[in-house]
Image (cartoon, rainbow, N blue to C red; front, side, top):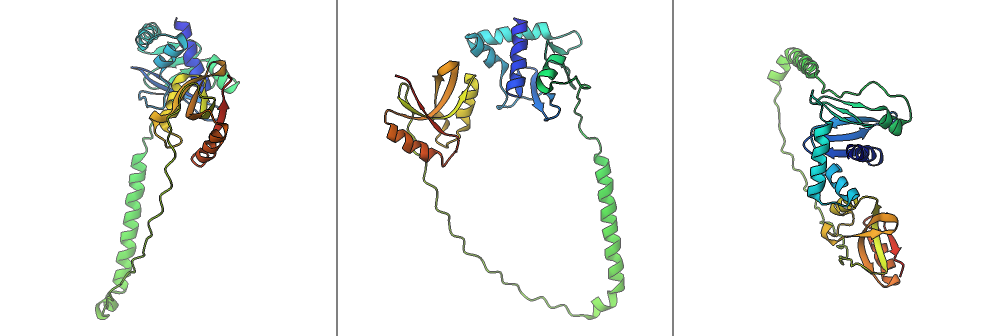
Length: 262
């Protein structure tokens, strides 16, 4: 089972650029040439959780997936506290050492020196620069004041009130709210906003609400070839489907009609 979990981590990093390891942290791919993998102890909602992937790919419950993940984590953790995933790399509290196999999949070249991201410890330099700038400004102002002290004392300063015109701001006309019609299973024509290989990613797309109709108003339904579709509207009328497609394109251009087979 360990090899299967290692492969799932590998696939998540290659295909999606991130993966979340519960109770450990997250791995993410950054850069273009070359691409590097970084480790963080924090996990966000945008990360793909490994336990969800195990559950979906294995067709098992969340509890069973968590048990398998814990078994893998116990086997992967070494005596020094590091975690090793074969074909992926080694996770330590301060860095991630990438394996040859994952690096070749990301870059197709030789493995570079392990990447380590450190926080900049040069804050004192900026503090010193700030002090120098403030001191220079103070000297400049004191010199000018000394030169014009007599003139400043004899001149009468007249302050005229400034009346600012307050511009009239017209309230913008609110855009019409998008039509919300919760889609139903089995309809012939479906307005789609995305197709995904993993159901978790389809749910994440609906959660982001790309059309502004509310996350609960999307339908996650099976799509041909084992994929998952995110449907925003469904109907048996081709004319109505085209009408809604044009309306939703005002919210997002990447919208299309999926015609189910009978």
